Image (tube, rainbow, N blue to C red):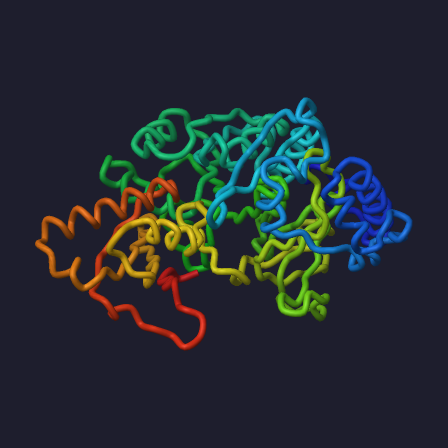
Length: 433
């Protein structure tokens, strides 16, 4: 089943005509409704009349996460606040987070693309969805919720955590579809066994899994443990949240809904279009959003793209799983973590050195584990164990209050962390992704 066959199976020529018109309309809309964009376009000597077709998109300036933080809170909004129906916030490096706003029409758009995504994963009207993504300022939970309602699914809005309750609801209610992070699904397998439940006998047949990097080997482990079809979903709050792209049952790339999220692949160094077939940074332009539409947003995610028609019948291009990042952001348990956030905390704590390292690991069947190694001054390290533990606990609490996830902190002696003549190696990611 294809939710919106007209748009998901549109020919490339028809799509390019549609995208061309929508891009011209979007540039006109932003010029009239967003002073920040109007100023930026003026500085580049651009007007809507300069955009004749979608090929002219390369004339437009990029938008970055820094632009969003610099315009905090509402400088990039294109509608007055009274027209904004919903606001979400995502974490940033330090200081201001990124803020996104949705009009009622944007919520309808979000519902539409999420219905496409759920259908792409194999959901059918009348199915029951157990939604174990977090609700609230994080876009994951509500995005899946809206799409499920649009598609005619029954939603169990259990949100994240409460693992034993998650498993009891699965066992009692028999939902066919589960949405959560892949690492959490592995963790639930261990909990299920402790509760005497056999993951192989679960009611879940389809997993809509995302919000963190995961590998093909992890997919195989999940599918073998749960006897489930594990599909990847991609999204980011700046663009809309989940629902930007989704795998179908063939698991040969994620279908990006290009009639509303127009993709480009660029060389991250030069900013020029990457050669066909090459991996590069994914850049997305929102063609129909109202609250906070973005032109050429640099996602920092490295992907490749395939424009061939999929065996499922969809003509939308497919992006690969994320191959890396062009910045130093890592994703831990669905949360964006920047080393600079840790550095900002450490600079405010007496006795610590400006040398630290983040070690991320994920053991089979467990959630991501983040350990922060922190060098302390020699006089601090020679203190009694009780004082060291108190400092360790203080650092841990400060970091957790900023990141919103549990971490481990280990104090180490001066000059323990390897120095570099170039860029400091702040992150050691041991996860197999």
